[in-house]
Length: 257
Image 1 (spheres, rainbow, N blue to C red):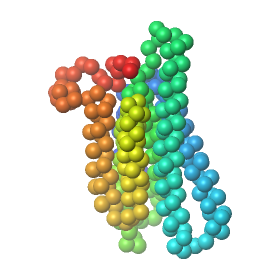
Image 2 (image 1 turned 180 degrees about the vertical axis):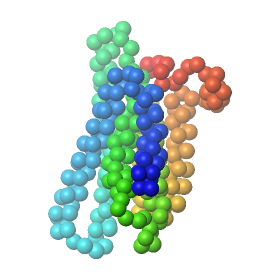
Image 3 (image 1 turned 90 degrees about the vertical axis):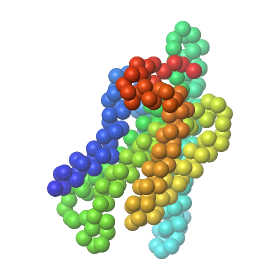
Image 4 (image 1 turned 135 degrees about the horizontal axis):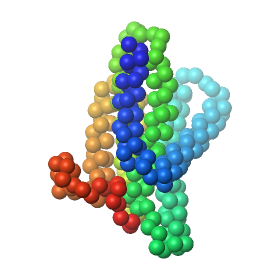
């Protein structure tokens, strides 16, 4: 039973991301490099957040009680802000690299920022999902019984679905974020930051996992629709895609902007 829970939750959390990687990224070495770079930027943001958290813990003398709760909330908010700052830094780096490639070889077609936004967002999401869920996933192998002390028996399943929504949200946030930077619509960056903060702070509502998931998936649907139209999608292209009549795949035939 523990093996079934382990593999079931693993495929729920990482199955869609794995499919996206295999069908849209693995076939292009350049996309793989950008994906790894995006994951690295997220790792650096986590390292910086950890350093701040350690310093705060040392300053407060590791006190117990209500102060630790407020420090935890502060740590989550700070971590989200640092992640978005590193997303902005990654955009700046990709923009400079694209401009440099064009200046060196004007005939060379540089990857579009829409494609890079998708790839970097997936890199952020995969690394975020791995670090947030891998320890929980390892515990699902046992020993022990979930919910024996009155907690939710669906803890692993809820955690898997929450990891999935976080990964997909990072993809959508990346697309919307990069588009806001390209068009200099700075309020878009603020919306991305606020929705990221909202989803992250909802985890403090434990053990109300149902409310967390429903609200997180509502935000994911909203951001997904926004990212779809930002990436050049339309109602007509969606209809053609669902009817398997669209031969222009968005990620494979993206024109340079």
